[in-house]
Image (cartoon, rainbow, N blue to C red):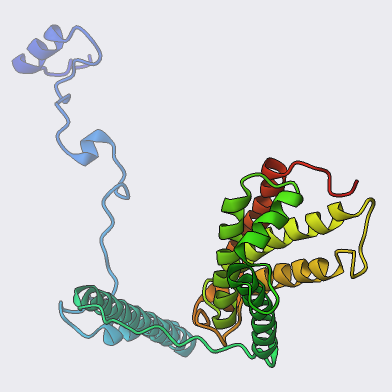
Amino acid sequence: MTDKPRQTPDRDTAERLVSSPFDQATERIPTTDEDLGLLPTEQIPTYRGASLPPIGAAEPVVEQVRFADNGADDVRADNDTEVMRRDNVTEELRTADSYDRELAATFAAAQAVPEVVAPAPVAATPRGTLDLGLLVLRVALGAVAVVHGLQKLFGVWGGPGMDGFQTYLLDAGFQQARLLAVVGAVGEVAAGVCLIVGLLTPLAAAGLLALMINAWCVRQAAEPGFQFFAPGGAELETVLVAALVALILTGPGRISVDGRRKWATRPHVGSSLALILGVAGGVCLWIFLNGSNPLT
């Protein structure tokens, strides 16, 4: 006979209470990594390298310690990098210092009182004998105008005088002959004096140009057809008109009362306006106070 195994009352009671194979007495709530089934390698790695240098240590020492185990090449390369970095820092500091200096100089210049600088003297342009030639032209034209004006005003040097000049204008077909005689004679003398001394030369020459245009028309109207050669033609009047136009365009030159003015040596717009005024005045005087055709 075989003996039945002895069973304790506690074990028999536990076996009767187990309703599932998972409901074993050994089962318990996992509380450790081993219970959860984690491997030992699944942990935060621990740094096992060289110890870090203390705070405040010199930077070159840190670089040398870091690369000491890598050989002499790594140390040399790191030292070169350090030198380049220091050079860059030095260049940046130098640039910043230069910028600060320029900014300070700009601010100081803005606060400073501006200095008044006198304009540089303009160098005189060589003109050679141009001024002397203009002087001769002015004096010649002015002298001719003064002589003819005095002949008309006072009858000197075989002149007609005021009465004779008025009769001459009436015969030429002008209206308002008395007024024209006075204005023409006085204008010739005044304009001639201005030309001689070089005063208001463009205006004086423009006034004489208006008178010479009418003298040219009177000379042409005295004979039928176009007459040019002297003594019956308008040869002299043509030369005087051309000389007056040239004087208006060139100016009186430096040897004159107006020699210091810009338009006296470098005429431009003003001389052109004076020329237009002289021509327009002469043409209008002939059209409105005479009206005949000088070429017939």
